[in-house]
Amino acid sequence: MDITNLNPNSVLQTNALAKALTESGYPTSPATLATKRSRGGGPPYRRWGRIPIYTWGEALEWAQNRLGEPHCSTSVEDAASVRAPVKHLDADDVSAAPKPVEPSSRAVSERAIASAEA
Image (cartoon, rainbow, N blue to C red; front, side, top):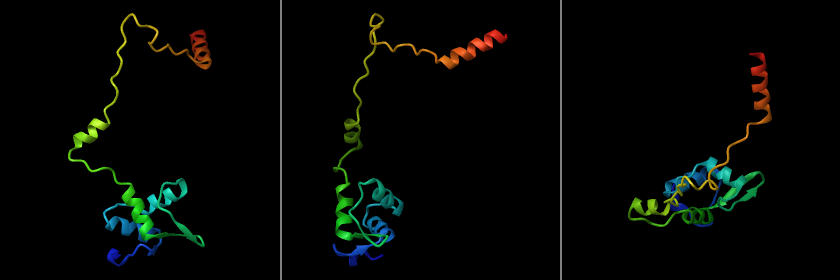
């Protein structure tokens, strides 16, 4: 597909749109577009009968809006994803300690049967 001939009002079906977006630097598969059509979050589309139809301008704007902010280093991304420090429990702080899990009644019954048979 020659994406240089596309104008904002060009009409594309799913496969052609996925190819045009990919050639424009926004790797997108037809399956991604189909999933986004059913779950939401994809580019705007219309139906012509049962066929989904996209306009190039709306789809390209959707793809451009999905881009993250520019970074100069991966450490910027790492700093944004740093988790909160983990609180370590003191030996005296039993209120915050996890409670023991009670065995299910089925597990208790199975143990009782097994010990009775032994």
